[in-house]
Image 1: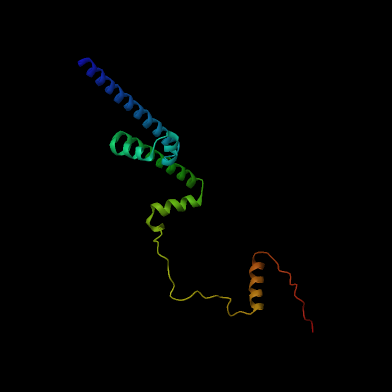
Image 2: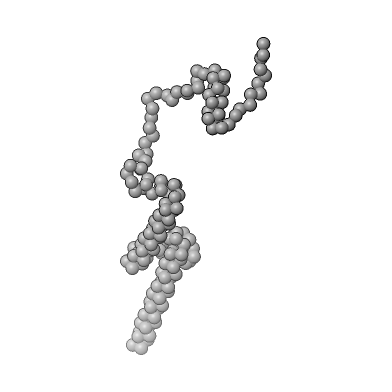
Length: 156
């Protein structure tokens, strides 16, 4: 009877070790996909064939696993910062504006719309059509453009 108990105990230990090895392999597989997918959780879960709940449980229970995920995210952040800086150095104004809006307090949006106490006035509101055409002609002439007058002339 004692030998049977020992065999059952050994079998149980072997099963636990096998399960632990499978879990370690699944964690490594997930972390590899996590790094290769730019830390997109949904893609990593699908590629590693594990559930979202499992990944969250691993994060909660295994500090090394959590640190490995966090390290991947930090590495991605650093890589994206480098890409942003490359864009800024190549005179990409959108990248410069984005960087300043996130890092410099003078360029941050407050999130509040500015309201005017008076309505915006239309400067052409009280002009006649001839005055508007005259201003347009003057503005275009300053840019080297000419408007051909196709309106019939009254030569009396």
